[in-house]
Length: 333
Image: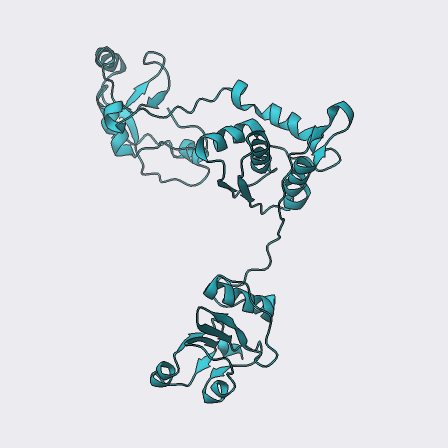
């Protein structure tokens, strides 16, 4: 008996062996089934992993197991079909300290994949189709049991946008104020995911097949280039302005103010602290006395970024400056 292809037993071999030994005597034995296990796992597996095998003849094991079958409670692992079927694990109340949540949702209540496909066809008419949509009713059920009427629902694998569709439907039905954040990294984010949300909000179809819009709104953003490289150095190709915005937001959680004509390296001030980002793409920058002579903004404290700093710890403390090194490879400059 093997798990389905691409899967594995949820418990370790030691635990499974102990559970099966409650039915009949089992032992670990190498049966040279490496190729079979490799086909299931989809890669190379160790040739030294043994199988869990009966250690007594099958007829004798049947007698022992039948006797155990007639006495409750059964071990955690048991066999379906009166002992002749596949293996299954059971969690008992005294272990879980409560009833295990049921995951049976009937298609009459939450829909099917066929329903989801049929729902999407008229909605996305004259637009690209999505191969594996989920039923809107399924997402509505999930949102119903796990959120409040003013929750923010995050779907980091948005697909065709069913989550947003469900949120908009529910807000229209019960007057809720739920919000959604969808993330989709595939190239259909604009043409399918966002387009579906637009049509749900505005309404779609014609004549008797017209579906009124839910109302509401959303914003669509595309991710730009990453601001940090894989080695945690600055990705300078994104441009100085994007870097300045990022640095100021990470420091203050506020948007970058308009630039200062008098102080090109000044970012802004927040909570009595002024922020400076002394950066030139192709030149090393040094926080020194000459730079401080050009600082015009007065504050209780300063955070200053540069490539190098020649000020002593005492000078930094006297001027109430926190120096931060710009994370870039200065050896190339």
